[in-house]
Structures are given as structure tokens and as C-alpha cells.
Length: 263
Image (tube, rainbow, N blue to C red; front, side, top):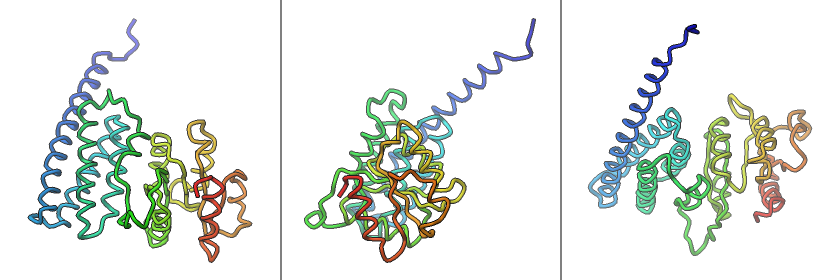
């Protein structure tokens, strides 16, 4: 008796997926090799830095999208961190260009054997270059990974700078769904989430993180301008500190870090 399904068609679809996946791996390898050359040219002064950064951003965005579509989570998380680092760079930061080459080399290694890597995403994140252009003699960089989940804007840049000045390694993600995947794979030491986020609210994201075994014990805090008596804030577990966007911001941030034994 035939049930109407076509096993041959299913096998064909899987074969097509594998062909497209391999093409993506090969195209991405070529893109990263070319990017490495462009970055070296920029460091030598023969290619404008802004053009090299545009090249890097294009490669990073393509990697993030393709990795998600072709079930390559380790490459996707690393590419997301790569993209965040690119966004953080300012014109003339040649040290940053050198660090982009390190990111490209790491991604090239992952592309060689995407299904056989022995490192976890958490291990990879902790060996990649950290953001920040502070003098290493003045800022003691700590081996503490912080995931900041906030929409782009002035407030986000201010908070990120505060964390960088504390010596933390910061990754900023502006989408709650992407942050959920990043957190569960990269396992940062601290997650700071804006209470108000598009699509998936920051409070809902925090509740999800605190409910999952993989992330429930990660240090966490919510940053908000909502009134302290807001009903949504009362949904948060008592172990999650609240950082208010007000005159008490610095004190709230310091207390949140102290509560998580990170200061």
C-alpha cells in the first residue's frame, strides 16, 4: 500500500541541500580569503579603511545568514561576534584591522571542517579579540564575557562603554531571538537585557533564559526606564537585579555586577 509520500523526492531535497551547503562553505572560504587580503592592504595604507570595513561587514552578514540557513551554528555564532566587532571599530583603528584578520582566520578554520570542530562556541568566544580601544596599561581586561541585549542607540553605546571600561569582553546583540541562540551556545558569564525590545520583549527573554537548564545559572540583569512598580518587572525572579536608566544607573550597574560576583 502506498501512503502518498515520495521517499525519492525527500532524498533529492536532502542532496540538493547538501550541494548548496557545500557551495556556501566554498564561497564563504573564498570571501574570507579575499577579505584577509583587503584587510592587509588597509593596514598597509593601500586600501581605504572604510572600504575594508564595508567588505568585512558584507562577508560577516552573509556568513550569519548562510550559517543559520545551512545549520552551521558554530559558524553562525562566531560570525555574529565578528559582525559586532566590525560595527564597534572607528576610522583609523589599525589594531582593529589586525583583530579582524584573527576573526577571519578563526572562521576559515571552522569552514574547513564545520561538523568536526572540537571547540565549543564558549571556548571560541573567549579566545577571539575583545572590543575596546582602551590603553591596556589603564584598563585591566578581564576574562569575563558579557552579552548586552539592547536596540541600537546612544543609550546602548553608553552602557557598552561603561562595561568595556570595567574591563569586560562585551558582545552586543540587538535582536532578542538572536540573543537567545547566542546565549545558549556561547554561554557568557553575564547577560544584560533591555526590558523593552521589539518582537520578543526583554523581560520574556530573561524569563526564558532563567527557565532553561543551560542558561539559568548565568548571571543576569535587566536594564530599563520603566517605573519600579511596573507589573512586568514584577514577573522577574528576585535573583535578577534591575538597572534603572536614571541618576542611579552607575550605582545600579555596580551593584548588579557585585551581586553576580563580577566586580
